[in-house]
Length: 117
Image: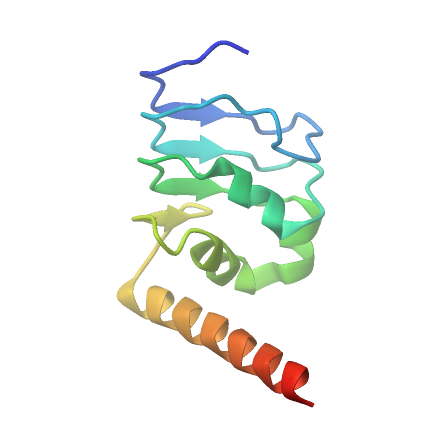
């Protein structure tokens, strides 16, 4: 697939996509809409990490339906080093970012505890 260096918005909604393994390098991409696909593993959204990404819509995928209201937190954990402004058309607040950091730290702590037993 050809690179699209100046593409800023990409809409891949309603395409029955299960993975995002074959997305080209999109250095200028700021907004991506991947709602209404067939993504069952939230980690697949990690393949959408582009340098300028700030808005992502993942509604109505099997994993987002399963996770429900915690989807914003999951995306913020996956994109912790990015300046995400909106998830599923909801503004990301400082409180959202803090909650995501806390959830991630709790998971790390649990993993450490499990390994030490």
